[in-house]
Image (cartoon, rainbow over all chains, first blue to last red; front, side, top):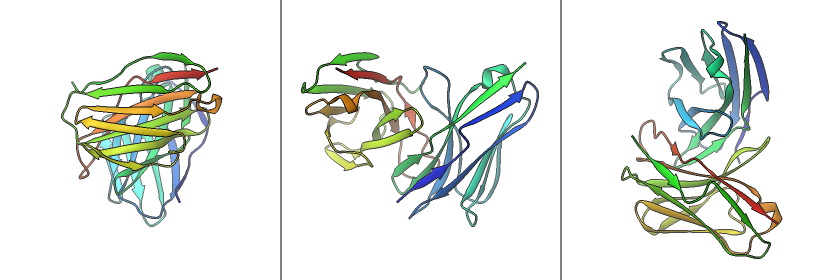
Length: 108
Length: 114
């Protein structure tokens, strides 16, 4: 089976850096994705890691360690608009398994 | 812009009714997915389809069926709606199985079964 664990809620102040961790257990692994979802909105894709290491896209970076079954999403220079839920998702061939989400609260 | 549309944003149905949720994508994507989203449980895969008339079960297919007669359209069917199927239903599509395979989500249908 598959299981993903991520913190349920994180709070940080505007301008700070926050890291959202995700650990996973899966019978097969192709890659780790991250999605952002604002309240009432649809999830939107942020990043995908298939290989170990750090991928950077603007203020957001995503890291993967396949040997540790672990990844994280790093958000820098936090802005109020970053307040949202963030989901990690494991890809196992052509299926995707999502974590329960981390609610990020950005305070002024 | 990729667009995934769902037939309704809000739907209220009675127990035992047959319910159809429709999803259409306009980017010629191979793969289409149906998820349900419940608080504290994240997104759970109900069914997905990687080609016309092809489908595979996800994690929670019980009580649901799907239909994909055309590449752009993927329907989720609740054969006999029950109260425990009250949820947010999200449709998604993606191009293929290689590379990043970013999924594009529709706005969701909030279904209430009374």
